[in-house]
Length: 145
Image (cartoon, rainbow, N blue to C red; front, side):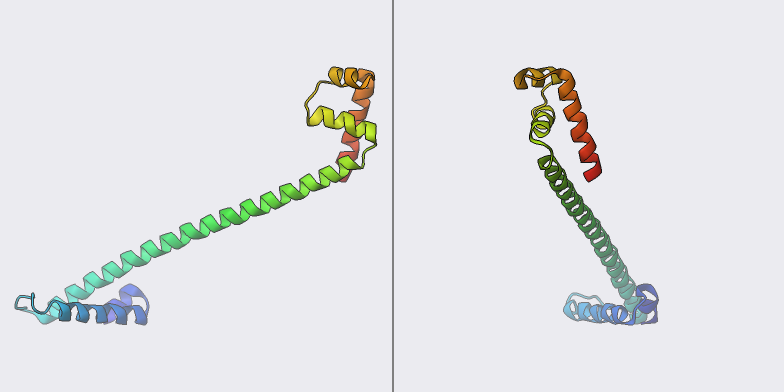
């Protein structure tokens, strides 16, 4: 019993291992050959049970650690997703607060990815005016975000 306690580090786990040894012997009693030294047989059987216990514990801890890492990754992903949505909401609100012409020019530039020259042609304004609207929109967005 002391050997099991030393190897498992807890009295309860040691008791479980010892009990499993006796249960194993009981279930295999018909198939056991005569034992020369009962003490040596019990020692070796207990040693094997403790070893199997340690392997199971190590595997369990690895799964727990792996599971914890996955949970942490998922939590971080959810938090990042939330922050991203919140930032997108703030940006959308800031864009909606822009003057109508400035907002239209900005959205054509950013969402439709049109060049300044094409925006100027479609809205019948100069390229310089398009540039000024974009700069104004970016200044307002920087102050909001």
